[in-house]
Each structure stands twice: as structure tokens, then as C-alpha cells.
Image 1: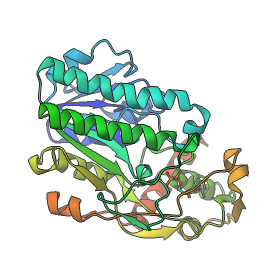
Image 2 (image 1 turned 30 degrees about the horizontal axis):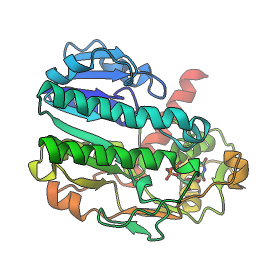
Image 3 (image 1 turned 90 degrees about the vertical axis):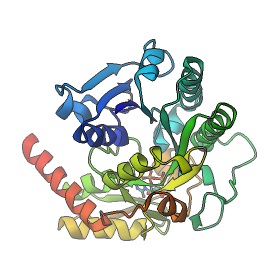
Length: 327
Ligand code: UDP
């Protein structure tokens, strides 16, 4: 199979590439290296079935050819991370919406019909007060102008672009709402909690818990996530549908911090920070976020293999090894 991954040098994209190369597929990545990084794809850059182009999804001249080549496309290229979104909402709007429209238009104009996965996010549920979210739940977003929600709005637009192309032109598109995903290659620079805490704990630095730490999240190991995405892409019943992807084991951010300190045998204290101090402005955090996974299970039989503890132990080991190499 020919697999095109936009944003393939990023966190989830690089794991998709690894999985497909291991399966004997040909993999073509395009990435502008804004948040993605060459180090994520170093391991397979010399692989004969692998190709990488550095290009921005908004201006990539090779898009038509790549789309014609592909049997499957994972569209992962996006501006992500809360901090990045607050810093540069203009880039978020352009890349996340125009990039998606460009690729769908290229597929349709070429008359192709590859399997397509469009990456959306649990952020689209907004501040719906429920603690767990099913695909049929209402989206609750503020009425105007709060840029903190720019990412959610762009991803919702992507979802509707995908549904429109699927409905009008019969394209084989599945939209995935990714809940908190963790694992190797994820970096904390853009605000993600697990890589930040692991790094802090390994250095015996204070773990920066935002707010009271009562907010909860459900973390899915990326090596499970890519199994779900692979199965959904090839599942005709999923085409034209939106599906939650994640793990439904929930933990509060305070408990997560304590667990990481314990697994690291670290001396780190917890440092509780206001959202204003953390983000430079008031910030509406989502209090609880857990996926309902009935749809994913019914479509694919998906069951995650990685427990949170196993993922954390693996990440801690990798962080310690990295520090030893640097020292
Ligand atoms: N968070 C935290 N300390 C950090 C980074 C994040 O307490 O150094 C919190 C953040 O406020 C949120 C949760 O951890 O409540 C998950 O944050 P992340 O950015 O990883 O994911 P998201 O907010 O998109 O769920």
C-alpha cells in the first residue's frame, strides 16, 4: 500500500510511518518541520520504501502527484498545542482549514478515491459540562472572539469539510477525534502535560500543575492510537463517520503528577500555578475529558494494550537515557 502522511514528522505521524513501514508499505511524508522534527523520522530516512519532502501544506507544489500516488492518506498536518494556538491564532486558522481543503480538493479534482483519515480533536466538544463524550454529544463553544478556542473551531471546520466531500463526492474519509495522546517523540514545548512532567521529574525540578490539578484527562499511548487509525482507515463502515479515538482510563492531573514523581523516584515537589501564570492570560481549561469508545470498539474491535503506568515507565526510561547521553 502507498501511504501519504501529512505532518508525518510530528508526534503521531511519525508513529504511523513506523507502523506502515514495518507492515511493508511505502510511506511518503510531507512536513514543514514547524512542530515536527527530523529526529522523529531519522530512524527510517534511509529506508528504500520511505520518502520525505519538507514543504508547507499551504504551498506544497507536489500535492497533486502525491495524492494520485496514495492508496491511503493520513492528514495530520496542523498547528497544535495550546501555547502555539495562543501565540499564533492566524497560523492556526490558515494551516488547519486551508490545508485540509487543499488536500480534499486535490483528491476530488484528480478523480482519486484513497482511504483518508482526517485528524480532529476532543477539543471540539468545547466546554460541554459532561465528563465523558460520545460522538453524538453537543458541541459547546463560546459565542465570540475567544481565541483559546481557535484550534477547536478549525478542527470542527475540517470535520465539516470532510463530511461534505464524503457526502457529495463519495470520498472514503473517516474523521477521528483524538483524545489526549502520549508516547515517545512527544515534546512538552507546546504545553503537553506528560512530556513536561516527565522531564521535570527526571531533573528533580518542580512539576508545574496548572490550577488545582483536579481536572482529569484520559491518556492513550500513541502506539495504540495508530492501531485504531489504521483499522478505521480500512473500515468501509467508518467512511463518512466521526469516531473518538483514545483510552477511557481517567486520572486527575494532580494524581498524574504524583504518579510520575513516584515512578521516577524523584525528589520533585508539585508546584501549583495559576492559569494566568501558566499561559500569560486567563484560560478556560476543560475540567473533564474522557472518550466514550463504543463506536470505535464496534467498528474496529479496538482495545488499548498500553496502560498509563507502562507508558510512563517507558517514557521515564527514555528521558533518563537521553539525559545520560547528554551528560
Ligand atoms: N497541564 C499542567 N501542567 C503542564 C501542562 C499542562 O497542569 O505543565 C494541564 C493542563 O492545564 C490540562 C492538562 O494538564 O488541564 C492536559 O494538558 P495538555 O496540554 O497536555 O492537554 P489538553 O489541555 O489539550 O487536554
